[in-house]
Amino acid sequence: MKFRVVGVVIACLLVATSAISPASAGPVRTASSDAGLFGSSDPTYDGVYRQSYALMGLMGAGADVPDSAIAWLVEQQCADGSFMGYRADTSVPCPPSDPATYTGPDTNSTALALAALTITGNGQDAELAAVAAQDWLRQQQTRGGGFPYFAGGAADTNSTGLAIAALGLIDGTKRVRQHASRYLRRTVYGCTAEPVQVGGLPYMAGSLPDALSTTQGLLGLADAFALVPRTQRKAAPKVICDSAGRPTDASSATARWIAAQITASRGWLPNAFAPGEADWNSTALGVIGLVATRTSGRATTLAVAALTENAEAYINDGTSDRPAALGTLTLAAIAASEDPRDFGGIDLPARLLATLQK
Image (cartoon, rainbow, N blue to C red; front, side, top):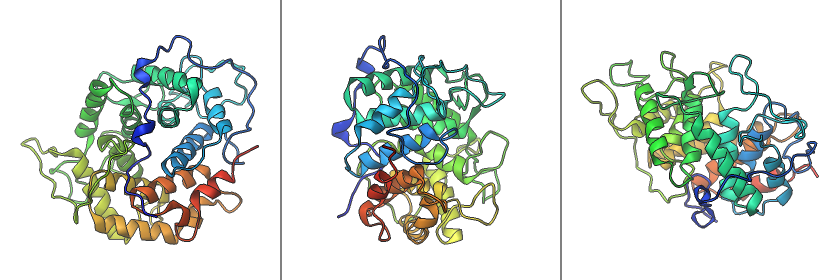
C-alpha cells in the first residue's frame, strides 16, 4: 500500500481549536502515572517530545491511537497551557521557564504537544489542551519574529521552525507564522556565503548551518505538518537571491542545502555533534521537508534507501525501541510514499504500539 501524503495531518481530522474558549482548559491534575507513555527509558528530558512524535506517527499511518496515550499527554500540560520535557508529578505546579538553567516549560515541547493534540482531536480535554497550548506558544514570539527554546531566552531556528509548523495547524495564526518566517528568512545563509553554506540554517544567526537546525527550520517554512499531496521535482531548484544576497525563496534554498548534503553523503545528513557520523533523526526530518517542498526526488530516494538500511540502528538504542524515532520514521516513510508497515521489513506502527506502558 502506498501513501501520497506529507507530514502528519489528515484534513478531516483537523480541529478548529481557535474557535474554542480556553477558559476551562485542562483536566484536574493528579500525581503522574506513566501508563499511556510510549517507551520505557527515562522520560525526564524527552517524555512529551517522544509522546508527541509517536502520536503523530500513528495518526499519519492511520493506526488506532490508544486513549491512554492521549490522556497521558493532556495530563502533562501545565496550568498556563505550556508543556515541559516531563512532569514526574502532575499535582505539583510547573516551575517558571528558565533559559539560564534550561528548566521549566519550553516552546519545543509545547509546539510538538500542540501538533499532536490538534491532530488527534480526541475529545474535549485534548481540544481544550490544544487551545491553551497555542495561546501560550503565541505569547513566546519575540519582537523579531522568532521563538526561543525557553521563555525569555533568545530566539533560535529550531524552536521557530517547530512553532511555525505547529501553529500552521491552527486557524487564525497566519500573521504570527508570517512574522516567524521572516525571522527564518533573515537567518538562511544567502548567496554571499560559501557555496556549501548557501541555503543552510544555523541554530542562531552567526553560527554555522547544521542539519538539525536546517531540517527543523524547513518544517516551518514548508508547512510540513499540513497534509497536502505534493508532486516531487526531479532536482532541487537553483537558489536565486535578491540584491541584498538573501534567497528569494527561503524554503527552496533550504531544501536545496539539505538535498546537497544528502547527495554528497549518498543518503544521510551529517551529525553536528559527531563529525563523519550520520544523523538519522535529521535525515528523516529532511525527507519530510524535501517532499513538502516538492524538491529533489534523487536526494529523497537516497535518504529513504539509507534510512531503510539503517532503520534498526535508528529506532533501537541497543536496549529498547525509541518511540520518537519510530514516530518520526513513520512520518518520513509516509511522506516518501513508502508503507510504514513494511519499511525495510519493519512494521513501524506495530513496533511503536508495542512500547506503550500499560
